[in-house]
Amino acid sequence: EVQLVESGGGLVLPGGSLRLSCAASGFTFSSYWMNWVRQAPGKGLEWVANIKEDGSEQYYVGSLRGRFTVSRDNAKNSLYLQMNSLRAEDTAVYYCARTNYFDSSGYAFDIWGQGTMVTVSS
Amino acid sequence: EIVLTQSPGTLSLSPGERATLSCRASQSVSSSQLAWYQQKRGQAPRLLIYGASSRATGIPDRFSGSGSGTDFTLTISRLEPEDFAVYYCQQYDNSPITFGQGTRLEIK
Image (cartoon, rainbow over all chains, first blue to last red; front, side):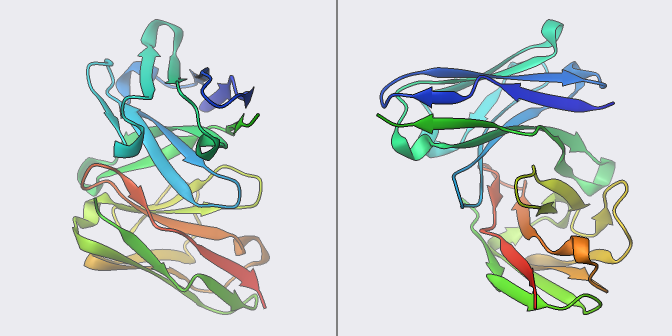
């Protein structure tokens, strides 16, 4: 079964750090771009970052560049998000998602994890 | 950054009716880079449509997508009870990847 499972969420103090993990199974992890998407309570979806198949390229939403770092370990079929200098506005469910390339029909996020909740509060 | 504006914000319809959801982009988006997702309460989003008009695996044919340039539409031909959820459009044409703010489809 194709699956993504996030972990590592929890309660963290403002200014603190947290590292999220996403374990992939059921597909060749090293063949896909991977993404982090977050959703604040009661709000919409916000793309956070993505990383190329071999980890050589990473892209971020502008407001988070410098505080968040996406990485991967293809030997462990795992995706990571290191989050530093956390703020209350970073409180959200964080999802990992796979980018699939549908030939000439472009790209989309076809597999999503169940999400992990991050709460930044004192 | 490409801003996607979805309308209406909330759509109230009855089972069996037709739903038409709109997604307007602040600049032209390649049709191959426009997708639609469904999200039910407490669940992760699910891919419905990619390439503006191609249904994802396992998606019923009552869901269809259309449009080009800056105007895209998701149509649900006959609403089933399980279709009441929040729907998001997404563009992958320009970085950063962006989502619309969502349309909530609720039972009338």
